Image (cartoon, rainbow, N blue to C red; front, side):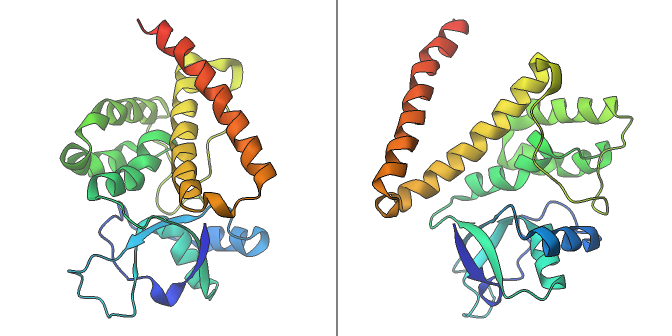
Length: 214
């Protein structure tokens, strides 16, 4: 994680999957509470026509970026990916509508072609998201609704909800671990020990989970 000057971020919409819409409510929330969730950035491709001063391309977090600009902030808290392939970048960009945010059926239809082109493995996830939208009567959050937030732990341990919750949490954990690898030596020894203890616990659980699938 690092704070990146907004002036270094290109106005590039390659990975924007829907218009930011009205971000006034999100800006109010961020103004009061601060930026709780980082955006995802990668180096701006060399082929971009952006000015040389622009160094970064937004992969995920376009609404947060617009809110920060509305607040006239100078920096954004970002998870910077020094090398991120297009396929992995699309995975980040599409993770919200596929795994977490309650999008409408129409919004999901709009990204279907990009899912097929960039993440064919995620088509069953898209189908599941469409079923969730249908179950809500198509009343999922639109681009102009309240700010997105991380899903809460499923109530009542519903198996399907629990699975979706675990997918999102594991995806976020993988991204954080990748960032931690880049700056592992800077983390104090005691904190590294605690992180490793938790990861060893996860490693012990994995064979049990794999055993349930055989």
